[in-house]
Amino acid sequence: MANIIRIYEENPNPKAIKQVVEVLKKGGLIIYPTDTVYGLGCDITNTKALEKIARIKGVKLDKANFSFICHDLSNLSDYVKQIDTKTFKILKRALPGPYTFILPGSKTLPAAFKKKKEVGIRVPNNNIALEIVKLLGNPIVSTSIRDEDEIIEYTTDPELILEKWDNLVDLVIDGGYGDNQASTVVDLSQDEPLIVREGKGSLEIF
Figure 1 (spheres, rainbow, N blue to C red):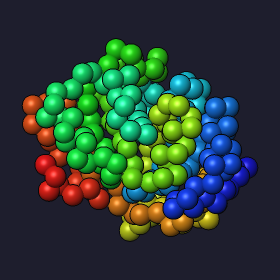
Figure 2: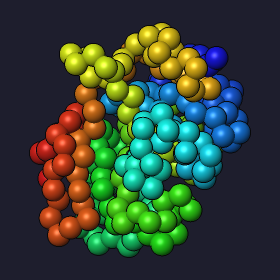
Figure 3: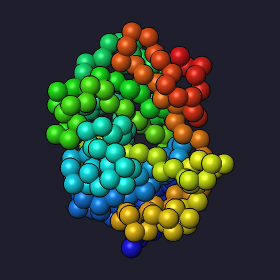
C-alpha cells in the first residue's frame, strides 16, 4: 500500500521533502510531479530499486532508457563525458525546463549504467522535484507513467495515480494536477542537436 503526501510546488514543505528522501534512501519507489507529466522514480545509487522500476516497465535494466533527474548542471561530469561550450550553452538556455537531453555517458556512471553509451539528463522546472534531488544529494532515475487510455496518454490526477499504482510504489506525491504532455527529447551526443521527440519544450531555443 502506497502512502500519498500533498506537497505544494510554490513552497515545498521541507519536512515533507525529507520524508520523500527517506523513502528513496531505503530503496523505495516514488511517483512525483515534474514540469511535464508525473514520473516514477528511485535513487540512482540503489540497484535493487532500479531493477524494480525496470520490472514494472517490462524492460531489462541495462536496456532501459531512464532519465536522470538532476538539481542543476553542477554535477553533470559525474554522469556525462566532457561537453563542449556550444552544448553547455544549449543546456544553460533550456534548463530548468521541459526537456530531456541525450548526452554521452561518462566512465563514472553508477554500476547499473556502466554499459550505457548515452544517458538522458533532465532538470525539470518544478520545485518539488528539484528539492527532492537536492536533499537526496544525487539524481533520481525516472520514467514517465503512461496511461493505457489512448486519448489521455499520461495520468494527470494524483488520486487516480494512487489507485492504479497503489501496490507497485511506496509513495505518491500529490503536487496537483500534472500535465499530459511529455518532455521534448533532444540528442546532443552528435555534432548538431537532433530532435528525437517533440513535446512540451519549444524547439525555438535551438
